[in-house]
Length: 217
Ligand SMILES: [Zn+2]
Image 1 (cartoon, rainbow, N blue to C red):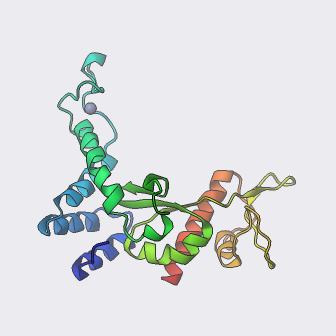
Image 2 (image 1 turned 135 degrees about the vertical axis):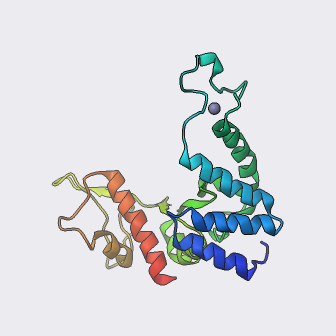
């Protein structure tokens, strides 16, 4: 991994601290361009453009044969951007992993562990233990907004049909058991215990893991 310039580090921290904001990302893109990393700058800008506008520019009011397809892109900024993004992504996935190296096993397919959005790492997938150990380091310089833990699943209550996480005072290992410090962040603000869907429970765990990483960083 290359040694990080202190200016780059400060700009990365600004990106990480404001995940919803495009401006720090564009400021850092300018910095990359001025410092010989044109492709990284372009990757950030292209992904920001794509995130803003999801529609093909030739799709409105044109007959189907004039809509962008695999054979031809019809002078369409959006679809040309996507092609360029895929090219740049081949570099991104190998060189711009931020501080995520510890959670990506050697030789693994990087895409299974991190996902880029708007030029930076948006989603991290790892074990809960890896996130607890490395999350604070990752989140200091990456605008991670979602953590998907590979080894935990919420439990559905037969009585209430709700989904929930639990903790153990002993060493019980179950997919729905999370450390108390995480459980406390998940369920602390709930009036009624449990979530109405599996997705909501998983989202709440993700939010709690990000909050935990921020507290400990
Ligand atoms: Zn198009």
